Image (tube, rainbow over all chains, first blue to last red):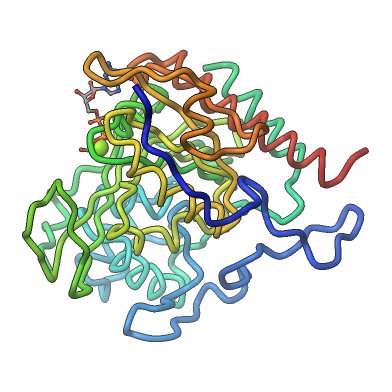
Length: 142
Length: 206
Ligand SMILES: Nc1nc2c(ncn2[C@@H]2O[C@H](COP(=O)(O)OP(=O)(O)OP(=O)(O)O)[C@@H](O)[C@H]2O)c(=O)[nH]1
Ligand SMILES: [Mg+2]
């Protein structure tokens, strides 16, 4: 039986675009998307949802304060959930709230300095070999 | 908003807490059509019971395919399953399963940004779904491997026939798997990691 045939639109399958100026040992910015800068985690650029904050699904959130009396029920629930580190995705799942809503709540908590965010390791244009090796070792133990 | 009171929120079980030393996370995305085994694969390797994060899709004029008939909705909730594997005391790997059909691509913006790479889970009964997915990943520069899981009622193709049909160059790994088996799913992830490693070596030879 003959399978249906794909016509490839992008010639360089599985390859990232070449980094513009490869520098030995220096990490490059990701090829697309906003630059991940932990210092800008507090910024909300618009209520329309296009770019709420620098929070990723796998940013790890840790609470470092008990919910203040002024906290909304959602904020209090969030703070109670992340006494140990928890990803934004897990918070979204446990709270049954969409990712976009959770990022808004978290941005408020970040601004109030009630939580800290541990930025994810992102894929660099020059992939970090030792990171990949660490992941492989971890998978081998499964 | 349908928010449950904070007293009723089920949090992670004690054994599902990350250690306080956890400081960074990486992600891999598993993408494929309906019922291809995304949730099964996430679940078979995850150390936690797969969780679901939802996002609301509000665009009008969402494309329809044969799975949803002629129904066009203006607001739909899309669920993404994910699981977790602790790599070290500091590093955590998250696996996200996401549908491959074009109308769900709005989910991909935050998802693929910074992802290590992707596994395209291919259903030989509906090969076409993966065509657009692979175009899209290539366009975004997301490295991927292809995993074919074998369903009893699915047509069988030799790997090299599939490579031709999927128009994939020789360096892109294509592997068969049984998403229900942890060892098999783990091997798929290892194949992806080895591929990513080879790309890294290629770019920055020692
Ligand atoms: N034979 C076989 N069956 C599988 C395999 N992977 C998944 N299944 C079965 O296929 C069905 C669908 O699997 P799911 O993991 O729910 O698929 P999914 O991609 O998450 O589906 P949706 O989220 O509904 O799009 C289940 O009944 C699985 O047990 C496989 O590798 N081999
Ligand atoms: Mg599923």
